[in-house]
Image 1: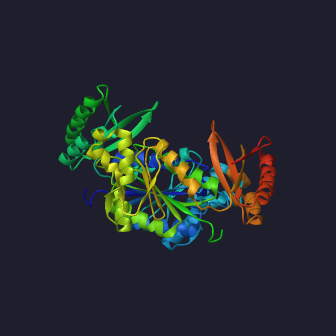
Image 2 (image 1 turned 60 degrees about the vertical axis):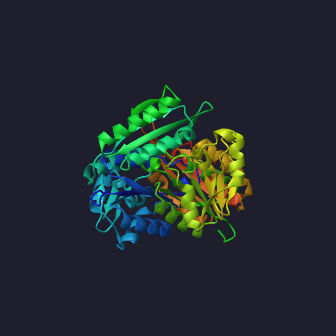
Image 3 (image 1 turned 120 degrees about the vertical axis):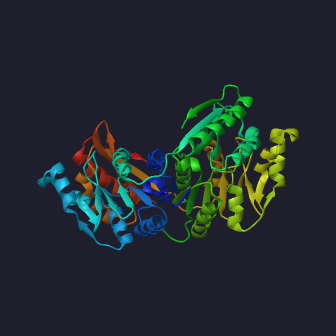
Length: 250
Length: 250
């Protein structure tokens, strides 16, 4: 991987994820979209609704990766502190963004644009808006940071627009071989294949189905020919243990 | 929250989570179990199968929190590098643990204990074992770090044993009020309630169901009486918008 290939990190913001009340769905949605366009997601963090924690994580991630995607904390309630935290991380004040205000006025009507709803027009100075096709209140882009909603379908709609604008590397090809073989039964031969294909990322992911152990073996890389060659060797290895082992894209 | 209350962090290890191939299920399982016993999970990170990344994240987290729980990368294949990374983080060598070897010998039989399977007996010097009631190969405890499997049902079985051994704070009580009201319609009154109950964590989580917006309002805290009082006020607020708004534990 060269320096030319952009990288990404995700920052999930919210007490509800850390308390276990809500199972995060956004990380997987972000990862899937970035992988599809050739922007490797390198790290993710989950932090609580505490400004100093958000600032510290955001500054660590934005210094290190090409892009940072945050989710959560941009709504109208008292616990929505992400905009202030992002502004603090960048060392800029928060202002009411006239473009965001205009969007919200059109959506709610001027007389129903309460102070709480107007909170969703607040943005760090210098930020651009991210379109929200679901419920209007926009996300925010500042520097290399994309600040998105926490509600999964809103976040995904925002992300679907954002990915079209990103610089990206070559697409990653991926093939998965899955069968009822214990990981430990194929580990040595798999290691030998991995050593012969140093530029292919070969992963082994055990699973349990109806009380029986199986393994998914994944070959990933930007060199499609090498991915296919490695996958063919892995398939032969798997079929020696489970003749019904199957290969699929992804 | 006083210094007496232990804290925790989770470290999810694995390329498959960051590529989006696998949706992580372990973070929520860890969060749920820790919350139930009164150990607040304060942060989570996801890192790839790269030793330097695992070491850096682990050293940052173990210095800051009472407990760190890792998942993934302790199997028999070439991409299972967590044990080596944990040992490197602690600055100790990896050895074959005789207790782990004995467990694996009993499970596989001595003649089927291949070098790949024996990899699962490797542990940092000074580590203790974490019982694996599902598939025997143990997890590892070293210092304040608990190294667990990535397969969710194995991880959960390990964690169910581990939580019994942890020092913990007072249990957290939680009540949720949910109804078809827009978050922005109750934001100001909710903020006023939150200001009156500074020791209760009041969260607002919008959702979308069948195209209609609703919100879940959660009151959480160790003071059961105050949680109930705050929740009663929130319920009245919600019912003013949606007479069918409901309250439930959790």
